Image (cartoon, rainbow, N blue to C red):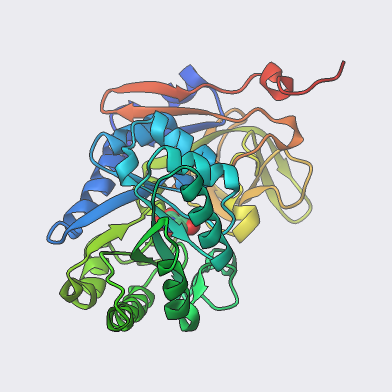
Length: 411
Ligand SMILES: Cc1ncc(COP(=O)(O)O)c(C=O)c1O
């Protein structure tokens, strides 16, 4: 949905330059129809089985984007009380909300129980005990799946690998039967699911297949001990193309896991985040200065790692495109205004010569972009716009200087 026409970059039918003129920069630009296409791709790939897609709100929690997804049948995968609040406000149905996370607090558990969410994905014996206790106090029953750590290598960046035994996530596969048996003894719990999420930006189906095999094995083991599992949650993690990757698509994923999982006759839960919003968004930024160093050229832009931290945090590659193409190019580092050397968006990029004040678009920034942004260096968080064919809407205003201090008390 991002494309060039007459050398100008468009999001759907709107020139990106028009969006920057109207809403300023740095600016997150999202394509509504790409978002919907991605959601439909996932839903269709698993259309032949009883499934529930719970969008991973952490990837992009903008209220309007979430609303678009929830109004089309998606549920929500949340990892905090704040995400639960956002999901409910944006119209997610409580019976389609799953709650993950290694460190759910007492308050968060109480809140989720009161809202009658579909499922807790519990990650430790102590958490199971606490959910049971709070459910008892509230005279209700909590529905529970156990997040299992299958010790499967997702072959992704070490910070976003979550399914290896040295990672903090989930209950060790070897201990799973024992922990299920414990959970079964808790009177205020209904234990009905197995959950796994092995990492993010996974670019091959093999780890998903290995994970599914382990889940199926566990399902059978539990059955033998009298524990019947009604749903299997395979998490999210499907990668997208940022650079040279050739990631599988949802159909490939379905082909890899369904032959293993379908015979179990359970409901399948899916928790995609990045796949849904990643390539539906770009971060548009303005060149403030151009500088020739001794060995390098720099384009100093008005977006920094407070706006998009992925390059600094994971050395992630984002394609950077000129909003207006020109014939001549050069190689430069695209860097932000923050006082840290790690503040870059791209290094050694061949880019058309951009004038001072020219615009660049950092592509595939729709997931873990704005959601991970901060006010570091007391920078106001960026605005966000959603484009729908010929129209666009500002779905989050740029923060003001007053916003920066509004919660502080200096009296
Ligand atoms: C439990 C859980 N589910 C789903 C996701 C979404 O992953 P992705 O955005 O890679 O699809 C994450 C992300 O880390 C997660 O922790």
